[in-house]
Image (cartoon, rainbow, N blue to C red; front, side, top):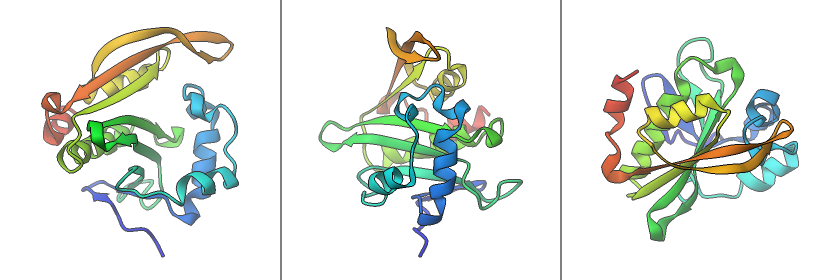
Length: 189
């Protein structure tokens, strides 16, 4: 049985992963262009690792969702993942994470899926703050954070290792009062 759609828009659905998504998830996070700037993906993800991490979690307590276009070239197939994890309810805090398969880059899916997840986080989960990080060489992730309204809060110098060099990590934060809302983000597209 498929998990229910968690968030539905005109162009994409955000839903929890299902059993048949394991192949896509493995291919995505093991893709050199995806794992290049995500330190958590430095070691290969196996089917067993996915089963341990994904199947026994509560989507309301840890929203990690797949973005699945409903129209166009990728209709019905997942193209990436957005997450608010860890979610620390007592502090009204979550960390934002995102990755999309390179085959779907350039279609606006990351911005749209991310905006809908942040809207859910601030409106439904009543989050006060969402943080995000991006390795400095990852211009696409930095631009995504900025387009979503995140404020650059600082640089952790040479904090992670990528492609033979230590690289800076840019830290971002977004407070509920700074969130301009879903419509404002998507209108700017």
